[in-house]
Amino acid sequence: MDVFCAVFGMFFVFDIITPGLSACLLGCSCTNENLGRTLLCMETPLAHIPENIPDDFTKIRIENCHLTELPQGSFSQVHALEFLWLNFNEITLMNIKSLEGLSNLTELRLQGNKLTSVPWTAFQSTPRLKILDLKHNRLDVLPEHALRYLPALTYLDLSFNQLSITSKEVFTNWPLYQIAEKAWGKEGLVSNVVLALHDNPWSCDCRLKGFVEFIRKVSPPVILMNSYLKCSGPGNKVDKYFHEIQLKTCMKPVASVAESNVSLSLGANATLTCLVKARPLSHIQWLYPLKIIRGFASTQTQIDEETITSQLVIPSVHLVDRGLYTCMANNFIGNSSVCISLNIDSPISSAPLPPPVPMLSSNDSPHIDIRIAKQTVYGITLEWHAVTDNPAETWFTIHFGKYDSPKKEMIFIGPGINSYSVSDLLPVTKYEVCVTLKNHPPREGQCIVFVTGSDISQLEQRERLIHIIVIVCAMVLAVPAGMYACTTEARFSCLDRCVDLWKKRRRHAEDAEGSERQNTFDSLQAASDEALYRDSEEKPTKRRKSEDRCRGGSAAHLY
Image (cartoon, rainbow, N blue to C red; front, top):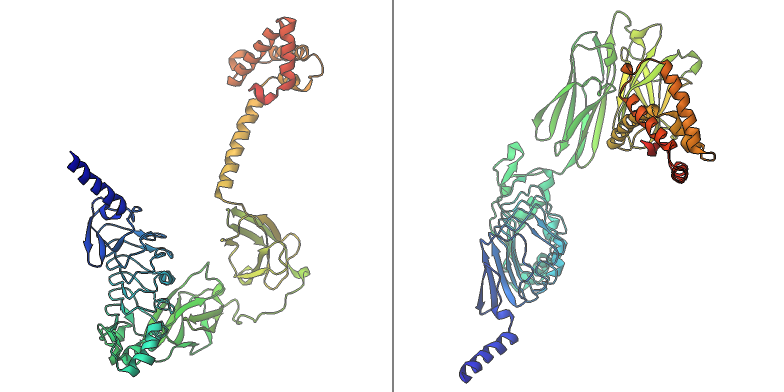
């Protein structure tokens, strides 16, 4: 018995001195190795990073455990941690402070997750990190400061991601690369600074020029795991290697047209063509006055790697289609635009659209009836009617803007159109809108001021309130007039007054039609009258209580 107690006491003391050595997470295994304790969790269904991880682990390996994020301070209590493997989980989010407290971490592996971005400043907490494995993720951006906080990094694997564009400054700003060029080369040492950048969808246009030149010049002490980086686009460079292509410097778009003035007869089909040169290829759009009302189809054709033609097709042109059509092109460097003037010849008027002229006097402007046909929370629809000498040639101008704004936006509307919709307005804002003839200033009777709602629920509540008011009004009309007198004549004998009024109303009702034509509200009235009659026959003490209730009540309280 003494021997048993002695052995038990030794185990108890050992457990108190080294509590972490005996603790392990449920579903995981813990081992002691030469470099320290190891926690191994394989295919364990963990919803999140466990909070009770002992602080004596030097290596943690949690793989295939369905983790979805790395929250703040995920392993901050494990100060001795040197190796952290979180491969083949479903991590999509990495908190900017997820690595805090891991100043001894030297190896971080996040292979096979679903990261689309990495908070690179998080590595300020890991100054000793040497190995960073991010392959088989979904990273599509590599900012210039990405490696700035990894001064000790000697292995970086970014292969099998979604990187398409990056700059050489990402790597030239890498502290270790700068040191390697200056010191290690002089000492004749070949470093194991390894980069893995293969199997990414690189877009080999002018934006990748600096990076392609950097890859070509990479030499020890920096080593590429796979130096045969391949292009995924544009079309003429697909599947070509970096060392096979020559890229030009980027330039902003330059738009041009063969003919800036186009004249067509009424009903003809119009095709407006715009030529744009840019590196990289630019985005092209057409702007014209009636785009919201009359939208036309446009097509684009790529001539070479830096030239595109865009065509705007206008079927069966009308008089309202006259005006300026602007071809606008832009890329990340800048933009360019060019205009085409479209003139329509017709039997009524063959003259081209006159250039803008100063606004005329309001005395020459005919009367225009304007109204709001529809109003929503964020917009309105206007309708107007004007009597003019030549409706087929009459243009209108809509002056629109905030009520207190001295400048209003002007929208030109062609002949034959008498409605216009405005959307995307600010909530709870006062606006003013006016309709005039083209180049005429607004005058009295041609403007409407309105206020937008706060949100959709406000209109819904307003509709419900209207229904409630209608119902309440119907009920109030059905209550006998004596009950209202009860609340307003509290200074006198309330009950006597109510009884007198009831008798008068009773005599008036007898002269009216019979009870067979009374509706449900009449039954409510009869019930109320009987209640008043019963109250008139009660004792004086009870009558005093009724007066008190009458003084403190209200008509709304009765129903």
